Every structure is written in C-alpha cells, then in structure tokens.
Image 1 (cartoon, helix red, strand yellow):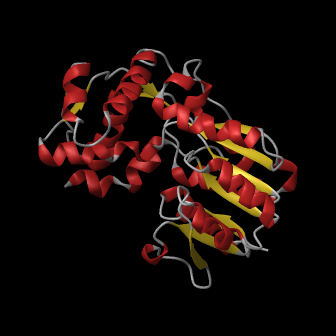
Image 2 (image 1 turned 90 degrees about the vertical axis):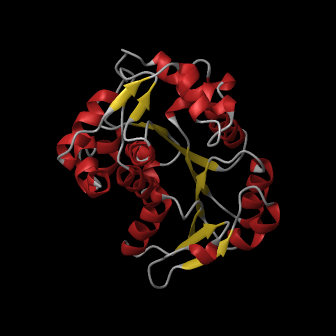
Length: 279
C-alpha cells in the first residue's frame, strides 16, 4: 500500500519521496502538474491539486498514509475522500506560525491553522509537523542582489530559527514509517536562533563576498513587494518580523528526537548554496 506525498514539486516533498523510495517504501508522488516532476525510477506520479476535488479519488486509491501540504481550500472534501479510500494516517506539514496567539488573524498562519483544525475534527489519525522558518527563505534575497545589488530589510534584528528542508523531510520519514511516533504534534526548529543580519554574515562567509543590505521602512518594503504578494500577506510577514525583532526564537530538540541527529545549521545550508550567492 503506497504513501501519497502531496506537493511533490516542493523541496520537502521531493526530498521525502527520495528518502521513502531509498528506504524501500512504496511511494506515490502527487502534484497539480505531475508531468513536471523528476522522480526516482519506479515512483508513480499522479495528478492531485489540493484545490481540485476531482483529482482526489484517483490519487488516494489504495493509499494508507498521506503527507499533506496545508492547503485549506478543499480540505473538508479531501479528508472525506481520504477516509472513504481507507487512508489511516495523515502527516501534515503545518507551520510554527500557528503557535502565535494571533494566528487566526494572520493570513499566513490562518491557512495552516484552518487545516490543523479540520484534521483535529476528522476521525483520521493525524501527526502534525510545525517547522519554523525554512533555511531556503534566504533564496529570495538572490533576486534583490541581482536586481538592485542589496537586500532591503525592514527589521534586520528580527530573529528566526532557520531549519534545513532535509531535516523536515527526515522528520516526516520518521513519523510515516515508525508507528509509535504517530498522533503527536512536533514543533521543529533549526539549532540556532539567528537575526537576519547574522544569517547574512553566515552567507557572506560561505560565499566569500560582501552581501549589502539596507534598512528600510515597513511601508517601503511593502511597496516593493506589491507585484509579488498580496498586501495582507506582506502585512502578516511584517507583523511577525516586528514581533521577533530583538527577541530570540525558542528552539526545540524535536529534529534530533525524530531523526537521531542534531538539526543541520544554517551555515551548512549556506555552504551547500554558496555558489548561488557568489554570482
């Protein structure tokens, strides 16, 4: 019986597929655009767009477990179809943003929270992964460096807990393949709480170059993002960064508890991606 991995084009999903395949697990890769997937030999791709219920039945056929991205649009229908198909266990990739007291009013956190709540009301056994900031959140800085030569930061002293995407995938592998770990909620963080300026310094060391940044106002940063994200999402990010400005992020040891090794550092991610920042 296969495990269905949704969001297979994402870095976590694609890494998880490889890990499951290498472990000898029957895995099925789901995506809204399965023709664009690059998969290990023998892994079947199926169409499953989480906002399109018509794609659910075929994708879920004979599946026992699902790795689910937090898309709220059709979550009720998805869970009904999953139960009808005989799915026993869902692992949700949520976000630590749901832990904030104002999560329901933050458009970024609210979508994850809605899916968590739908799963809590479902009879399906659920395991929730709540990672903090992905280490790859630094990648958009490349666009700024290539277009203007500097990064704009409204809150340079805002702290994050950058977590390597492979650690998230390995945590998912653990809870999908070890039944004793099921049914819990795991807050996942990187091993360090780092400000944006500290992350930039680590990238500079890895790339062997100076990475300039400018401190800008909230209003200026939001204006610069007009073509890339809705204003409500920009406000959600700005409010989160304001709340962590000068306040180190609480860390957990759940990555090590699930994977058996310490969480990878941001310096490791920076070294792996240094070539992109050298250009």
